[in-house]
Length: 314
Image 1 (cartoon, rainbow, N blue to C red):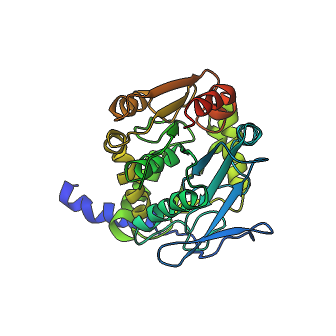
Image 2 (cartoon, helix red, strand yellow):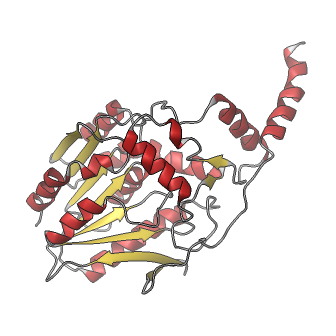
């Protein structure tokens, strides 16, 4: 069969493979905890936040910049406990359509609105804690979002912490799409870019690192986690990831990059490229020998990360 004759068959195959889609939910499946705190986005959308204050006056404030796959429990509990005990306040924010915040889950007509939600959170911290040193912490996709936020920040930051930032990726079993997945993606790219079709955590049992595998399986069982995304959402997110080096070059705050030595998803050469590109001369890299892609990279490095934060209080 000639190649031109194959094209209609290929298009039909792709359209059939990509016909499944998941429901478009506009509210989270779980109610927020009692006493939930809310911010109002620039366009009036309600945004869930959670702020923890230490005893006494906080020394500094850490803003956890989260990616779209937000769990019901806060990330890295041992690290957060150590921060609070050391006198740091922490805040996390759920952008629209993620976590406890309402909004269409897994698809956005305008991804810039999600970026604006993160900026709104940072502005809120500046207003609430005037004069206090503010740090950003972003993990994986959150690292790409933290770099975007730092490059466009309206005022100085005390530091930016990047944990396994999603810039250049490797192919990892259970963490990257299969060939058949890419066929489905191609069909959706052609016919339905806004349909919820991409499962970002479909095969956690295949992940080699025990900690990452357990986290992936827990995320599958967590109803709050957004599982299914549209191609246009992921394209927009990828554009932010692709700008990581440019945003690093515009970041003049001190930077700490934490790398899990056993992270199978993030190319460490890309992380080194980001650190080299950072505008600030104050840049440090920590490697967790047993850390994978997830929270183990932080939980196994609590003391050195806390030491870096305390050294950059100003």
